[in-house]
Length: 145
Image (cartoon, rainbow, N blue to C red; front, side):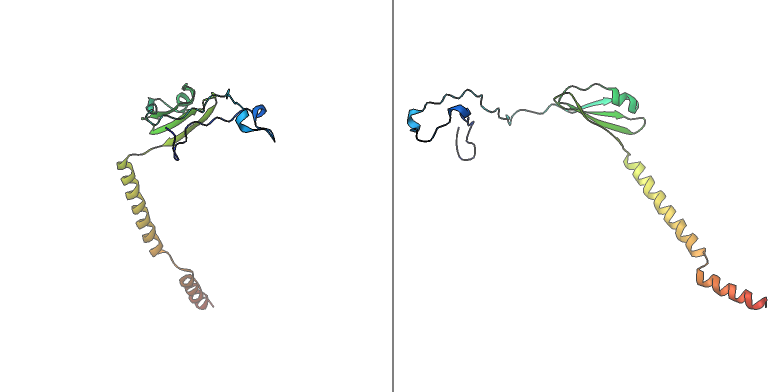
């Protein structure tokens, strides 16, 4: 089906068969020897995400991955995961490691931060300012003269 939005595969003639100046285009017969460009099938599904349990970074980095695939390696005991990709040419694209924390851990960390901020405010309230210190020093200096 060829229309404005989807013109369909278009094949260019080889360089040596292009029209020369002065030739009549009706006299030229071009038989393309190139294969049409392969179009992506919109109904084709991506392969599912593969999740592999591992124990530690060493095992994650050593895990073999097929060419052109990306997998998720999970270490549940250490709360870490790695995303490992191999390019279609066989070269490793990435093996990035990340830490993850649960919602309860986030709430506990937020509570700890709030407690630390409150304790810091209490400590700052009990500090002597520079002006108060200088004033006290001046009084002591006058008394010791």
